[in-house]
Figure (tube, rainbow, N blue to C red):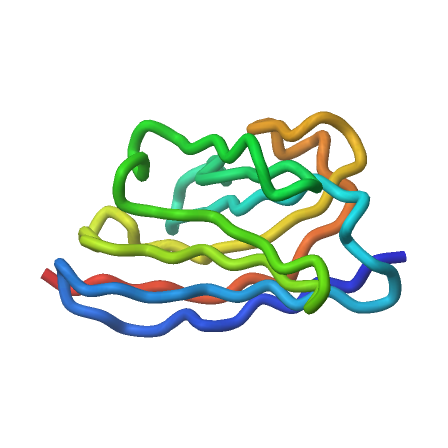
Amino acid sequence: QVQLVDSGGGLVQAGGSLRLSCAASGRTIRNYNMGWFRQAPGKEREFAAAIRWSGSGAVYADSVKGRFTISRDNAQNTVYLQMNSLKPEDTAVYYCAATRLASSGYANLYEYWGQGTQVTVSS
């Protein structure tokens, strides 16, 4: 079992930055591909970014490409999402997730999920 704890969310003005963290415990995540998803009120959960177990092959949703950066530190068992140039439409609860399948944008392919961290971007 892998337990994931998301943190780093908060309230920020448009144009600002936040860095989300996802700390894993129970098992090393070095064998897992990791993803970040988000869910805005009244909307379905959507893919934001993913990264392979090796730290290579990062992929991003078009809506965040060029503004968000996913990274990982396997020694610290932690995954990060650096979010820059934030927009009000980035407001959502952000979740990290782990999968042993190929790095994917499909939420149903992920086995483990964090509890989520709220990001609110004011205009």
